[in-house]
Image (tube, rainbow, N blue to C red; front, side, top):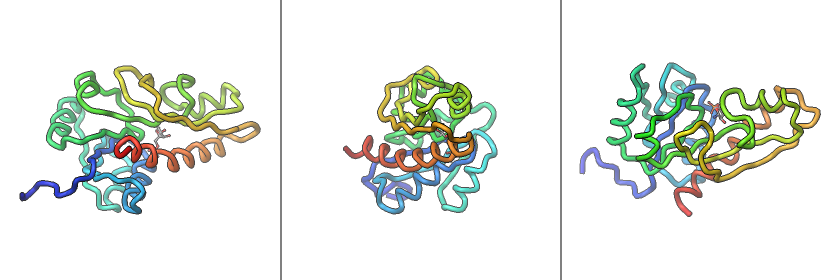
Length: 185
Ligand code: GRF
């Protein structure tokens, strides 16, 4: 049928607000056959580098307006994804969206420690010797939903820049794997 997807793969959308490096690794994993999913769209809430990545990768994208909540709800209804993937989306999703779709997020700390913004820096400045990443379902709170996966790294003696690099490395390694597991296992 015209306009209808022929794919039987689970369908995902990715939401981002920033650099978009996780978005890019998700797309690359999908193209390498490591993530069995159809990536319907990148959705952003503002001008950001993730858009440049979507253009380069040939992934459809949509930038939400300032009044984004209703617009996002309608777009998700239209796309009907099996999973909404947050990859650096810097807005709190409203309850009607959280309660209707299955949503997953990646956070750069070992939750429940260091919720919210600049979590890598928060952990570093606190002086922790071990930090890591958390992949979790999204509920109505901020970084509070049920934990799916965590990976810890030792950062003793590392400068902040190196900690950031190591955290992003493990994000890029594990997010596509865990998304694939959620969708296909
Ligand atoms: C990542 O560190 C992720 O854990 C957090 O936001 C950052 C997004 O980075 N939620 P990027 O835009 O994917 O490069």
